[in-house]
Image 1 (cartoon, helix red, strand yellow):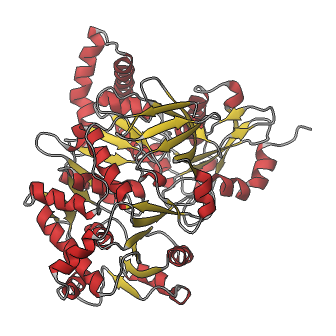
Image 2: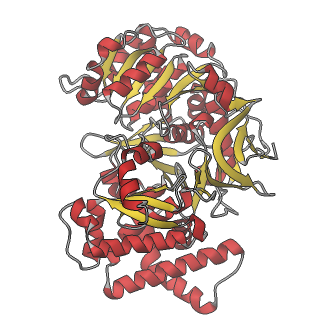
Amino acid sequence: MRKEFTRPLVTPIKSDTNILSILTQRVQRTAHEPLIEYKDTHGTWESFTALQFQDIVIGLAKGLMKKGIEIGDSVAILSSTRWEWTALDMAIMSIGAVTVPIYETNSSLQIRTIAQDSAVRMIFAENDNQREKIEAVLDEMPTVSEVCVIDNETTDVTIIETLTEYGKAIEDTEFWSRVDSVHGDDLATIVYTSGSTGTPKGIELTHRNFVFMAYSGIQSMTDICYRPGGARLLLFLPLAHVFARYMQYFCIGSDTVLGLSNNIKTIIPDFQAFKPTFILAVPRIFEKVYNAASQKAGRGYKGRLFSRAAHLARQWSYAQQSGETLSILKRAQYWLYNKLIYSTILGVFGGNVEFAVSGGAPLDSSIAHFFNGVGLPLLEGYGMTETCAPACVNPTRGYRIGTVGLPLEGVTFGVSDDGEICIKGESVCRGYHNSPQDTHNQIVDGWLHTGDLGDIDDDGFITLTGRKKDLIITAGGKNVSPSVLESSVMTSPVVEHCVVVGDKKPFISALITIDINDVNAWLRSQGAAEVSSLDEATRNPIIAAQVDAAVDKANAQVSRAESIRKYKILADSFTEENGMLTASLKTKRAVIVKKYAELIEKEIYVPKK
């Protein structure tokens, strides 16, 4: 390695243990305090104490044992985020079985591929719609012996109750004997990547991986999970994604109350009802909150006031990051804007949020500086499925915008000779399921080769510059990392996705999609007429001018040779259903470039006559 940096482990972590220990230790500390809060079918918030939730997990685990689930058997969960997901996950792994998460948006064919590769024995489906997807390919999944429905409309008895009843035939001693036989290096879960570059790979994560990273994260972010009045996280990302899944263990392992929501359409009232003290989200969520606030201000006096307030918020953030202070006049203006505008924006998140953790995609610096300026630091982090999601994150004090922070305690980062970021430590996965060659290629001498390019400064802060596979090399030999351009363009209130292209071409260009609802909301805020279709939107000069401004803003961050010279607004959408997005909503660059190859050649790179 050309560079290495390790963040010391201040307190030793006992990681050679069953992941259930995270819950049992929480019960020992705060047995009768709330652990999980959720909305019932009527929309009312309910809760489980730590002891109540442990009893549920144990009952389910015994039921699985009675059903014949043995150590090493794979059990899949096909569901949105809900408390039953968390309980089943804990129950499955506690008895040495292997949880296989499946995204609720996966197709029947994707379900079949995952179930075949991991030899799934049992599947928990959220509802009849998910069950139907399973049954469409059930004959092609010979290892699957039972499909259980969590929300079964044909009966008032839930699968949770049924499984718990089965479990009553298992003695406590038999259950705890099974728990004690499961150790740190035993397989806990196989998590399938969302497949932005090809067929999803099954990543094998052990009990040690998750236990170590849960407590490493807690020790690295004590200000977030231990605070006066208690810490609260509202989790709304899909639990099939390892980032959200890790955060539930982080909450259980600390004294944080975990709130669960699965409807992004109700996320604002959910924030206001649950009142989280910190939130976890992808950059797109923060972009949409900013754009919504801007659109609500509209034009005229309110619009000008918001624009000035946003500009001053960024100025405050730039000064804070450089160790400077604003003038007396600007500090007075900042105090006034804080009372009139910034507090209202933070009120969207429930009014008690102190920090936000952002990950999953690059965060545009202008969005980061805006939220930092209004009083909500976006602590950007980085990790992979192969490291249980987190590997580094910005600290609550001394955070540096533009970096992905410091390694978590006990984690080592390295930079190889070609600039690739590599990671070593107890967070690194066991390997790739049924793929020893991938394991051999990706994990070398304990170092996980991430495929990301970046650097580490003398203080240990990590900066990412792009993906090795995404690196675009123009015909003139210029190496261009598209992520900076794409994340900047996507801060526009009318842009949904931006994909930069230009490999082996004379200049850089981009394919841009827009969202009809966002476009019309923005047009209304500008006092302009709405459009009736995406096709009409692509020909609207007001929208074109807004996209132009977004592209100009992105180009200002790079050299002329790296800038977007031409772009095309598509009358299409990139979705998971049409194969353009992964389940974690990342664009599939290779798929998109292939689909629009003819358009790119004929409408962007038109030969000069």
